[in-house]
Length: 116
Image (cartoon, rainbow, N blue to C red; front, top):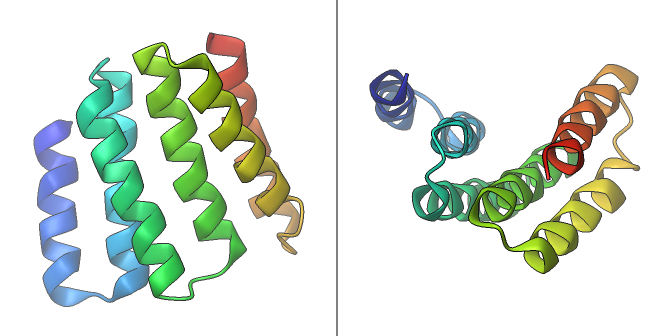
């Protein structure tokens, strides 16, 4: 799972653009969080957020950058950081226009709060 996420990110870093890179960094962050490895999850979550912001990818991708950081902070046991990033993700996500995208984000955010 981890190798596949890194390989996918490598591929899309060569063949894609900022959108693909941001998604790939988010995906790697999520895998590290699932594996209980907060430091690399935080590292890749920061990268996902940075690329989304710098690339002007829109609120959905910025919100998912915050989601990655909230999840990584939860894995690290950093409750204040988790809550801070969670709130930023929620606030940013409230303005996502596509209802399915917004629902998916909020379901992912609920799984962070429910897991802690």
